[in-house]
Structure formats: structure tokens, C-alpha cells
Length: 467
Image 1 (cartoon, rainbow, N blue to C red):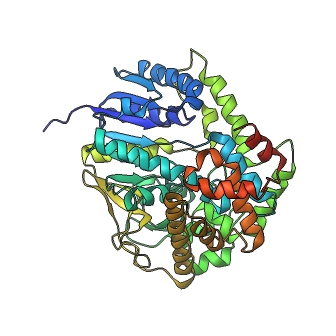
Image 2 (cartoon, one colour; image 1 turned 180 degrees about the horizontal axis):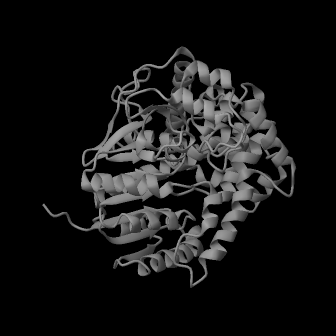
């Protein structure tokens, strides 16, 4: 049976990552005949949407394929008849991320986009918006798949399934793709000469690796990872602190790059505080803001019709390998091995079957069918259960706006030392993100009456300017 051409809607279409997405669709056109693409953004992102939208159309015009790129600030205009809806938006733009990082760091606490206090607040801002997207999809494109790349991807996917009651969703991350591309090179092999098995949570997974005879080559990769010249696939946005060799040997699994924030918290925090104190450098978000400004200047070039190399510095390498391959695999029922955030269904027996995990899965027309990983050892099991329950508290607080639940999440989170300082950071972040947290309106009003102010000068100035 011949399948119809595909309509794709991208929420957050003004993102600097969009050219990566276009490149992935162009490369896979023979498997995924795209008919039209709609890029959707909000009023605050209008200029970027127009710039990146023109580049996206130039990329298609330079290809052999006749695909029209539509731009809109109204997602309800874009959604009717969509086959796939991809999400890559950032509520509050990069200024919100700057506040997520700087406010915790002003108290000597780790500030990072998806980990610690900042990661939880990104979820608080994002989950209500994604649930609104789901409600529109139920009405306007009830048969569409939601392919989520919005961070924190695991928690967002959890909220879509648990609170949005939408099962046709797959959460994605580029980190596993980076590992699967780089690690074969460490052993002098091609990508298709190794078998990977992943299990855990988004930005908190581990994996094992086997050769085509079934031999466990995880120890061989661990050995190579400690070669100072080796590229172990760690994303560009993570400080390259080495793991402890003895720990990796004991677990005989390879942690993801983000585990550095937990296994080497002392060193990672020290590095972050150094950047925070450097007015020339600033936090990662401030660095990314500069990189993004440079990217959009490049995107304005009417002669540019391909993804610029500088995009790799943004930290989203291999985005299209995850998102576009997932969509192509569903459309063509390819049953490809892809690492996804999806319902556990027993793949990781240390967690409930109904929660979302990040695991290896076969992706086809029925969606993601997770591959059983089996139970973890005590240390990893303890970490995983703590982190999942923290995530569940974050999702509940994001939906209900309950301050006590948010505080529980803060106290559970390994990057937030419990005590009065935790409450102060929570309170300051609530004030800082008032514009994007209507579910916490009553709490924020109380905090304002109590005179809560923001300690960090940069974050306070952004808030006072309404950014």
C-alpha cells in the first residue's frame, strides 16, 4: 500500500537547531516523502522564525525535492492534518536558562539546563505548554505522533503520557547517538559492527556494548575512554572531566556524559563557579547566547543553503539523526534500534512499568517497543529510583503548582543541598520566572509580599526588564 506524503509541524521552529532538522529530512526523503513543513513559534521568537524559516526553504530549494516551508505564530493554524509534530521549544528563551543557571550558582549550587534546580524549573515552565500542545493535537490531528526533543526530554515525555493521556509520543536526545557514533571508532570498528543496549532516564542512562559475536566489549571501550586523546562522544556543552576508572570497571557499564554532574559533582561545580565568576565568559547559557547570535547572523546570508559547521558548537550535534530517523522509522515501519524515552513496560524492572524511561527500543509503525535491559546493580538501582521519583515530583508540581511538591523535588534532587538555602533558591526562581509559571501564581504573590528578591545581579536585571 502506497503511503501518503507527510506533513510535519515543528513547535519551536525558530530554534537554531532547525537547519539540522531540515538536513535530516532532506537526507531521508526517499524513505520519508515530506509534503510540507510548518515551523511554529511565539511572538517573542518571530524574528528568529523568519530568519531560520527562509534558510529552511533555501535548503529545500537547493535539494531535488519540492517542499514548502510554512511559518506561523499560531500552532492551531499549523496542526490540522499533521502526521508528525516535533517539539524543540524553550519557554522563556535563553534568558530563562541564564536565570536557571545563575540563581543556583549565586548560592554555590550547581546550575545547569536539565540538572539541579535549573533543570526542575525548565520542567515547571515547559510541561504546562506541552500539555496545551497535546490538547490541540487531540482536536486537530488526533492520529499524529508527537516526537519530543524539548528538554528535560524525559520529564516532558512523562508528563505527556501521565497527565496528557497521549500515548503516541516518543522522547529523544542526541546524547546516545553521539555515543553510538564515537565508540565504534575507539575499537577501530564501523557503526554497524557493535550492538548497544541502553537503560535509565534521559540524561541519566547507562549502556553496554557487544560485538557481532555477542562478546561484551564494554570493558574494552572503558579502557579506550581513558586514553587522553580519545573522543568518547561527550557533548560539546559538558565540561570534559574524566570519570573514575575504578567506578566504571565495577559497574561494567558506560555512563552518559551528564553523569559527570553526579559522579564528579565537586569538579563540575568548581568549573561552573569559575565560569560564573568570569564576566567575560559567564555561564553556559550566556556562552550559548553569543554562539546563537553568531549563528543567526550566518543564517541571514541569502546565499547560505546548508547547515553551517558552527552549529556543532551549539551542543545539539546529531539532533537530526535522532529525530528524523525516528520519524522515518515510524513512517516506513523500519523497526530501527533507537534510544528513546518511552513507557517502561518492564524493560527496566527496577522502576514501575507505567513510568517513562530512556532505553533501547525497536521503532516502527507501532511506535517504540522497548528492549528489556534487566535489573541494575545496587548503586545504579539506588540512583535510578531516586532520580525517577524526583522526576515524578517535578511533573506533579508542574501540573498542580503545589509549592510543597516543588519543595519535595528540590529536597530529593542530589544537586540541591536541603535546608533554608534550598527554599531560598526555589523562591528566587519562582520570582524570576513569574511570567511563565501561572500555576504558581498564588505562591509567587505571597513571596512578593514577603519581599523575596533575587541575589544575582544578572538574573535580577533580566527579571526587572521582563525577560
